[in-house]
Structure formats: structure tokens, C-alpha cells
Amino acid sequence: MKKIFKIVLPLVFVSLISLMGYKIVTKIKHKKEIAANIKTIPAFIYQNLNGESFSNKNLKTDTPTLFIYFNSECEYCNEEAHMIEESVDKFRPYQLVFVSFEKPELIKTFAQKHNLLNYGNIHFVCDSKVTFATTFDVQSLPCLVIYDKHQQLIEKLKGQTKVETILKKLQ
Image (cartoon, rainbow, N blue to C red; front, side, top):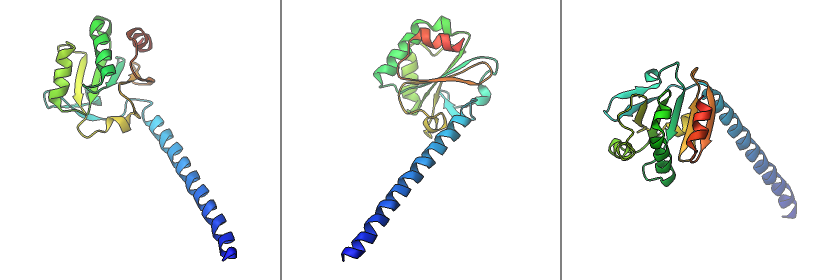
């Protein structure tokens, strides 16, 4: 019995270490693939508030783009939108895409609450298939993903961010 225990225990230990190593390597590889995919704005299709498709093809190619991943019930998301609302004129040269996985009605209420609906450069879209988080490697709310005018990734910002910081990065 002791002999079997001496053989089985090391085998189990080696197997567990191998499994953990495999999982770590797989996760690192996946992170690298995502990082490579978001270096430029990846292909996406969401639904705007009118129920029409809104995709990467709707974006202006010569304009910096700010994706804002939000939830209408998130206190920090509401504060972020409020700060953008107060400085909306400073954002006119840029395109802003607010993305949420919530129902279009909730997104529209959020947009109305912050007076951000009637601007040609600000878009609100519904991610009904909940793909934004995995496509853009986002894990928190709010999360800002900033691209330059050549659609190259500048930076991802997690959490509430001051308008001055966002504008500085967009320039």
C-alpha cells in the first residue's frame, strides 16, 4: 500500500503542475491574440437605437474614436457620461461610441438623461450578443477604448476617467 501511495502521489502532483502550466500558457496565448486583434478597430456589428445595424464600417476613418463601455445603472458610468455632457463641445472633432449590453430602451433613457442623443458624432449602440467585452478585452465598467484617426489603438482606460485625460489621449 505504501509503495502504491509513493508512486501515485508524485504522479498526481506532476499532473496537476502540468495542467496548471498548460492553462497559464493557453491564457497568455489568448491574451496575445486579443491584443493583436484590437491594435486596429476590429470588425463588429451592433444595433443602434433605431434598430439598425451599426458596424465598424459606419465609423469615419480619419477621425479618432472613443468607445465607452457602460451600464445605465453603474454610478461611475453615469458620472463619466455627465462629465462628457459638460464638455460635449470639446468632443466634436471625435466620434464617441457608447456601447452597452442592455436593452435599447435603457440605453436611450441613459442617453436622454445625459443630453447626448442629438449629436452626429455620438452613437449609442446595443451589444445584444454581449461580444464587446471579449472582442475588445474589457472586464470593467466603465471602460474606454481609444483609437487614433488611423484606427490604431492608443489605450484602454479602466474606470472613470477625467475628460482632460481622455481629450489629451484623443489628440
